Length: 406
Ligand SMILES: Cc1cc2nc3c(=O)[nH]c(=O)nc-3n(C[C@H](O)[C@H](O)[C@H](O)COP(=O)(O)OP(=O)(O)OC[C@H]3O[C@@H](n4cnc5c(N)ncnc54)[C@H](O)[C@@H]3O)c2cc1C
Image 1 (spheres, helix red, strand yellow):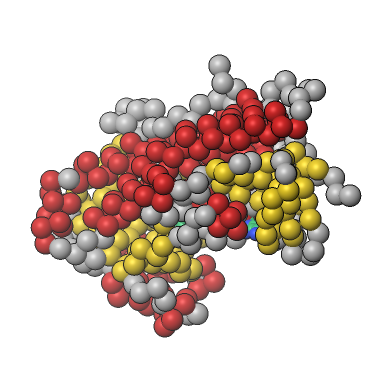
Image 2 (cartoon, helix red, strand yellow):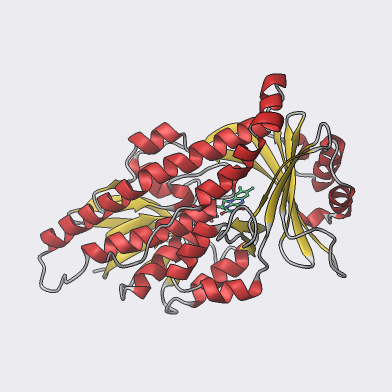
């Protein structure tokens, strides 16, 4: 007979590893099943905002990551139609947004740091979950190699195409009619960009650049598209050519960075979200199963919060489960099950509106910034510029709290 696992987490991304680490800090063991044969080390940098640093501090990885990654000190926006600046916000101690901490992190560095803090047996690689079945108070988790695990709690941190979200009744995330091309550029002798996030909008497209450290930067370009970009999908050279042809009036150093980009470092992705009303009406948890991270709230990257929100989820989920499983010695299976169900319900309650707010804000901001209508463009560049530039900071002010309820 298979052993019973207390907590099974599907997916070793930011959400899965943060949840596992939060639980570990509370003395609770979990098992993380990851379909790949190692951590996903590909992908570019993530902008991590104040809310993410609070969560990273809570699980005990903030300080080591701070030492390796430079801070950003401002956000500047400009119109790529006129070439004129529209808004500027400073994050530094003397600026308009005191107390904010924004840094760029390599996804790989964050995942490795989280994984290195976990006991070595926590992550089981090459373990793809293919289906889930009920069995009394337990869930049977079927893997692609034919094996079956029994779990008292099942947490889906399995990304946008989540099998667990599907089991909970969520539909596939919806394509928003926009795509993004991203790339990183390495400068052997250092680059000329200030430590700020720069964004340019106009003519229905949006571009930007974020320096990740003294020698590398990451740029992005979002544009309206159909669900397939067949022409470009297989050809980074075409992607680069496409971007260079659509940039409008942007600074020379950004244009030069795009020209210099190596073709191996360019990727194209479609932007998908879970519609906000599904977040309000759907089952974030059902019995002893729940979702976190992109499996729960895939969002557009316009406010750079998907990964940050996955960190918040991990902290809140660990706290709710920690409370539910406290003093469980001698408890009957039924009582334990009921406590788990209630713990996951509190997690869902705490996260539902936050996820709704993040998805809606990101979508609206992206829509307005990428708009090509004359009236909306006028409002965006002349009337609402400071308000819009401040929205990411507003979203970043959130505090997900500590691992133990006081
Ligand atoms: C273009 C772009 C730019 C972005 N920029 C930012 C940014 O600047 N800042 C920010 O905070 N966020 C950003 N994000 C969002 C961020 O990347 C995601 O929100 C974050 O990676 C979600 O983490 P996750 O752990 O929920 O999911 P994932 O990172 O997708 O991890 C899911 C894991 O589950 C595994 N898995 C999947 N299915 C199974 C299965 N059936 N069985 C077992 N394992 C499985 C996968 O292999 C993977 O390792 C951006 C996203 C995009 C697309």
